[in-house]
Figure 1: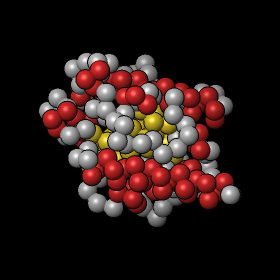
Figure 2 (figure 1 turned 180 degrees about the vertical axis):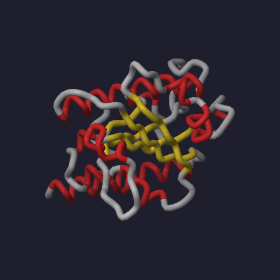
Figure 3 (figure 1 turned 45 degrees about the vertical axis):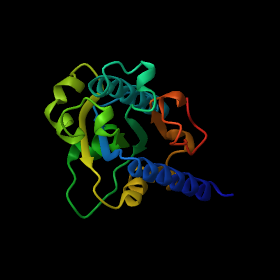
Figure 4 (figure 1 turned 120 degrees about the horizontal axis):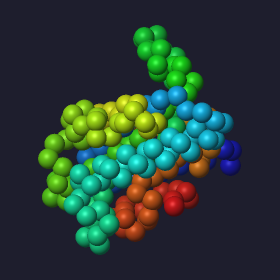
Length: 198
């Protein structure tokens, strides 16, 4: 099987997973993480972005669950499927920041928020990030901006969009990562679709 065919199959598996989350009452969001200029090789930059996503996720889940590490939180933590992305040159205007900082490299994520009965977050995720940038963004850390957009339709298309760097061959299959890291933290009904899972 070609790598392109394999990447398409993995993207489709993530799409199936996303559909199951939505059917189970989880709310999907498209996440975008933009970064300050990072130093190092492309692999080093990727690792810095991944670590920063982990830090942001770690802060966020304390707003969703009072004790994220408790047994009662297993299967009730937000799930983020994250992938590096690169600017696609469009007819519409793009900011200089989007195409120059880190050569335009950033992270996209598919964020799945657990049903309201399992979350203590008082507002929708997009409103939370818009209002609380100062909680996640610090001048001494790599994250420059964090944005979430509610996915109201065409979930399959948004999955394709978020993971396009993989199926276009710009990153390998292992470039996509999932938070939380532990399989036990994700509901057993939402089977993880690909090999890479820490």
